[in-house]
Image 1 (cartoon, rainbow, N blue to C red):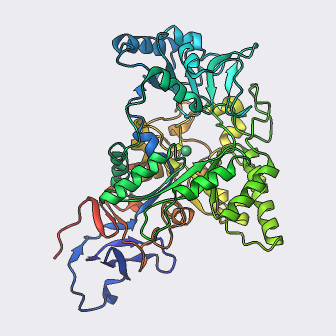
Image 2 (tube, rainbow, N blue to C red; image 1 turned 180 degrees about the vertical axis):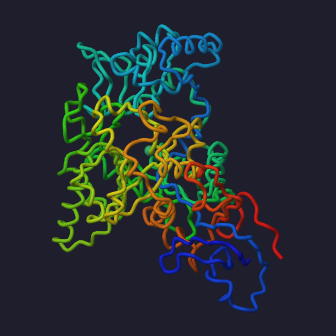
Image 3 (tube, rainbow, N blue to C red; image 1 turned 90 degrees about the vertical axis):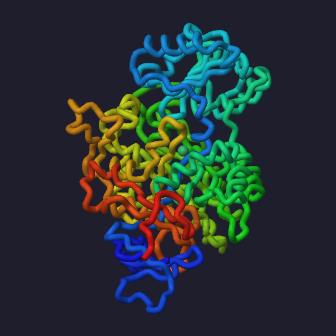
Length: 561
Ligand SMILES: [Zn+2]
């Protein structure tokens, strides 16, 4: 097939713009100007009538299986009123008796009004006490449970915190869990609860459950996704099953979690057990994932200057691993040829991780070992100005969830960080200017926010710093624009980060990331030219056709002539 009369933004530095391309056997065979097109090509010609074409997009940090498995969660009303929440939960419990709903999972509670002190098991018991109940916070890192739930989990004053200071149960003065949980510390106790209940969540990671989520991503132009945390090996099996049925229209790359230097070898072994390195495989596992700190909204980020709030993680927040262990983890990953993806939100976590890369890399080089480890820092919400050039110097990839660039998390982090640091958050312009590779992502974890994974929705927010769904208070922020306005990312930067730079992060740049001869024919035909679309309307730009490996997988192309 020949696509012509298009504005093709290739993401290929060799020839950034073209108007015609040739697809043969699922790959780009030729890309260039129509006037240079080889003659006598006996192929159907599709006239794109001046439409803009970009490479297939890559979501470089998301959670498609978590989204797929969240369908049974119950949405709470968006309110700051505790009474309204409790009434809603009580009414739900009355309308859905224990026999029909043995465990209820609500999302989300506002941590601004119900924090560690307020979200107690007793308060939740006052709504539902006859069965386990969990309420999730909007950031996905804090949970609020009732007394029944703690009992069924088997968690009490004698239960050690999985990771002291970080992955933990909030406790009263006597060490008894209060019902507030940080960093999903309960997850490793859930199987006990399910066993006692004789019940498991209705949505298991089957191909049928996961496929609609992948198809949605595909319809937004996504041709590859990085799953930042493989919850269970069944997720990988489901992806492989979809692949073998011919129903997987994107590349899947997954990461295996580890917590400490001690359990890294097991995670590395899991990676090699789950990966399939055959040339045709579209389901790969080549990365381990570490949560280095918590979230700025909960005041659990690792910071350089004291937090304004006091909790038992200490004034500088908690860090999962200090420099020595982290550098050693990087040495082990480098030796195993497994990449490293690190969750971090605080400036101390960022600096520690930069220091670790610097140390591990120079040791490897001093010892004559090849340094091929690719380290990606995800989130990086608060970075000290002294560290902004280090990702470029150290070859670190920075991943940012661009739809968070406006008001999605409100001003909650300001309670812990103060206004000055809050205003410095989410500013990637200096990191990019220094020459680092930036990649972008949706990081969606539930069906309720899946629509925000559409790349042009996120791009609009990253350019404007205004969230159309969750605006900041317009009385205090003109047009609800998040400061600083100078942190706005350019559309060109965003498209680059969604294509070629993300392909490098996933190590799929041989086949993905640009419209270049020889690569898989992945492309998106857009409804409008994003560069001439007003910034506040970018979210309306959508694919009219998505082509994956030479086949139209969403929308349609004009009929060939
Ligand atoms: Zn994530």
